[in-house]
Image 1 (cartoon, rainbow, N blue to C red):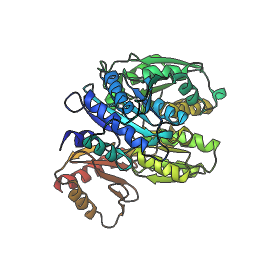
Image 2 (cartoon, helix red, strand yellow; image 1 turned 60 degrees about the vertical axis):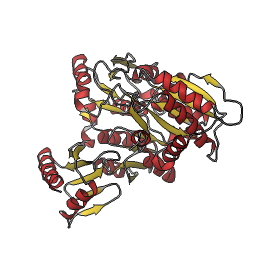
Image 3 (cartoon, rainbow, N blue to C red; image 1 turned 120 degrees about the vertical axis):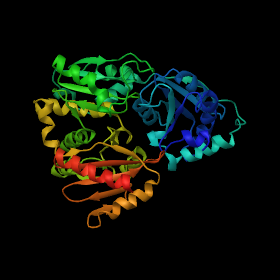
Image 4 (tube, rainbow, N blue to C red; image 1 turned 90 degrees about the vertical axis):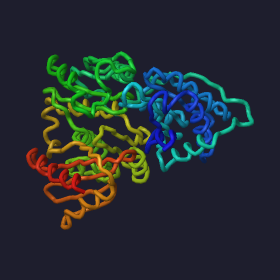
Length: 451
């Protein structure tokens, strides 16, 4: 496997610095992305570039811009930004975008997330393979004048856009603690909360790509420990944990207990359906069964999708769905150009907390219905063969292959998916109680390891 095959993932470019990703390669990727964007029906008179706080961000984004300019394309430098700010800019300015970030990965990584005009997703099947091929072949400079480089600060516009998703008139004074993990939340979270009736405390708000306090990966519960402690210590009403590029958020209630991505999806869905009766809501197939149950109870139409933003955005475009959620704390909004935003989701949760007038631990109660395993990864030599072995062990269960293998036994269910990049199988399982969940997890893991 060469370096391009290593760093071009299913949804983005991501690799270690400098052995896999350096300025020269970023320059070539910039030229290739510009060429790819120019070949789209809508064209690309300009490209937006943002970056997170990693130490190589400015150098890499600058090199990428030079590559794009070599194709005669103008580049707008958005500067330090969250990923959802870049998606917002892509929608508002009708331009393709590139965000330099490795999200929750450690400090020695960097990467690039791409979108076309209107925040349209670019994944392996919708452009990344083409961009990789162009990088490999080499894209010569266009026989025109190089594009121009200019800067544009969209932070205030983005903050106003995020606030527009809720009725700020119903908000009440609440104490909110946000752990931004030295990531881009330290920039965008205070801007969004400005003028709202919340007392905001930011943990680790300094932008520092070395992540000196803890990894910027809130899906791992241990990385929420400082936030959970601080919420309880200060008597806060809500805790918010953001990842490195601040496009995901995990919520903590006032008792310090984390709220899963599935439960947050259900809470946001209920709020949206109260405003838009009958709306369609998407949920990926790892989400709790509680999500489609809640959507139906609130008069909406649930649609189950594959895991991954490119699939959700595609189905959202096809169905006109108002909202979509993933267990991994990605939340998508039709009126956000179908792009995901942790901050918009956080605003919805805070709105629901204020409308309910009770503690978040009470708000969540009707939406917390089952016990989940979380994602359990197992290294196997032949993932697809193991999946078939596991499927054969449940001949009488309902099974589907929408994304990996889903087995539904009525009272409990599980999904087993192969990793896109490693010889791993990812198990997610849900049951009515913790004891049942743990028992079934042990049984399925035995099948996997013996497969």
